[in-house]
Length: 352
Ligand code: PMV
Image 1 (cartoon, rainbow, N blue to C red):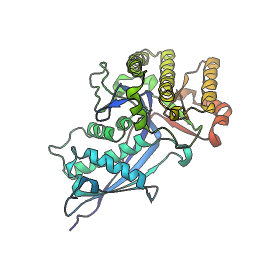
Image 2: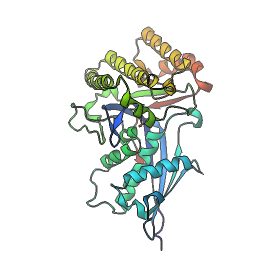
Image 3: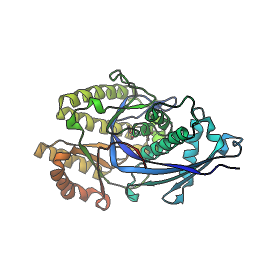
Image 4: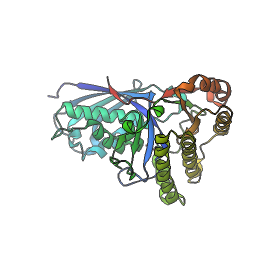
C-alpha cells in the first residue's frame, strides 16, 4: 500500500542581479560570474506533499507530479517542473518512486509581470532537498543542504541558485573569491562592509505584460551574438570593480557599474532579436528622472533592470523618506496603475 503523505513548506525570495548572468553553456553553466541581492518581500511559498509509490514509474516521462498555483492546478508550470525533475534524476534517482504535489503562492501582486522563476525554482528545490534528508534518501547524507539546493536549483533556473542564500550572493567562477563555482552560488556576507547591508529596492512596474523574451531563448541568442566575448570580459571587469568599490565605500563606481550592467543587458537583448526590445518609453523616462534626482540631491540612488521593462531603484535605508517621496511624486506617474513593490535586501529562504 502507498505510504502516508508527508509534507514540508519553504518560503524563498526572488533576487535582483547587479552583475548580470546572460549567456550559458552545458548544464546551465554561466558564461560569466554574476552578483545579486536577495530580496525580502518578493517571495514564493511552496508546500511539497510527498509519498512513496507502490512501484517506481516505468518511464521518466511518467513522473508523478502535480503543481498548484494559488489554489489552481497550473499545467503549464507543471510541465516545467516535470522537466526540471527529469533533469534532477541523475542526482535524485528515487524521484521515480515518489508522488509529489506542490502548492505555491507568490507575494508579488498578480498583475506585475515580475518573473518569479528564481523564487519558485529555489522554493521547489529546498522542499526536495529537505524531503530527501527527512526520508534518508541520500547516502552518505548531505552535509551542506544550502549548497546542494543551490547546485540543484541552478538546473531549474540559473538565477534560482542565488536565491538559496540571503544578502549579497555570487555565482560563477571569478578568479577572485576562493569559493566561487559555476555549479553553485556562494553567500558573501563576510566580505561586504556594513554600509552595503541595508540597501532597498523599489520595483517600479512600468508594464505588467508577461510577454518577455523567455530567458532560455535569450541565453541561447548569446551564442552567436557578435558582442558575446566583449560582454563576458566586461562582466568580469565589472565584478572586479564592484568588489573593490564595495570594500572602499566607493558609491560613484558602484552606481556606474550597476547602471552600465543594466544597459549592457538590454543592449545585448535589443541587438539579439526583435523581441528583445523590452524597454518602454516610461522605462527611459524613469531612468532619466533617477539620474536627474541623483545629480540634484547627491543621494546614492541608481537603477537596474531585469529582462523586462520594469525598473528597479536601489537606494539606502537611511534615505528612505526622501527617495520614497521622489518615487511617489515623480516616478509613479510613469508606472502602470501607479504600481510598485517596496522591497529590500533580505535574509534568504526559510522553512515554515
Ligand atoms: O535564471 P534565468 O535563466 O531566468 O536568467 C536570468 C537572467 C537575468 O535575470 C536577466 C539576469 C540575472 O543574472 O538574474
